[in-house]
Image 1 (tube, helix red, strand yellow):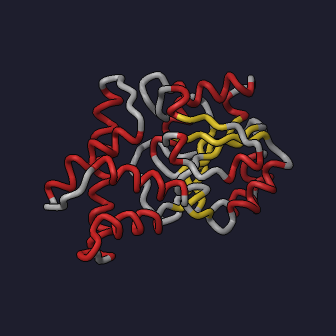
Image 2 (image 1 turned 90 degrees about the vertical axis):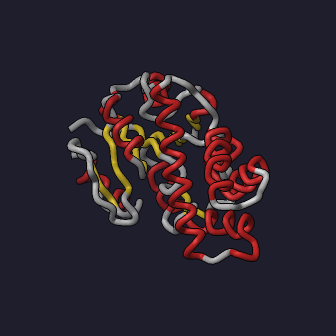
Length: 230
């Protein structure tokens, strides 16, 4: 197997967690009627609606900012629930909560470890103003959907193609780590090795499986030589 030279990292739910941030967002939206069970149900509906809108745009070869995708989702979701709220204001709340996403406990140690041995970049489908900025202290290159007007696993797969061009190496020399199907499928379509970080032990439903599956970043760190360099 080709030796890994570059490690590409997804941001949300890979390096940082949005779990508590979504709860905080719904607390601000629901106010006096807030309860955690309802908030989790609404968050599941929001994510479902997000993928519906995003898939439609990608099938039409459209690029729309994440902010605008969420705006359409809230426009659809909140009135159906009888919630009166300015959807543009809700999106602003969502963006602020994304910026405050908490690092997973192993993230900084993992970054310190891989930066000594590999070239590292971050690849995100999220607008740049939604990102927590911790990575800037490490001077890690950022590949964002906003910059390249493309999302992971869209029709031309340009996000991952840009990484290959930037580092000027064979795709198999890159390992991408992410938590969603688009991270895995998009990377593999470009010839990049794909590692699925499955923190919640969910089933993989596609015929083609990830090259590697881990539960947290330490599982790559602790086994990096025998797992991806053999």
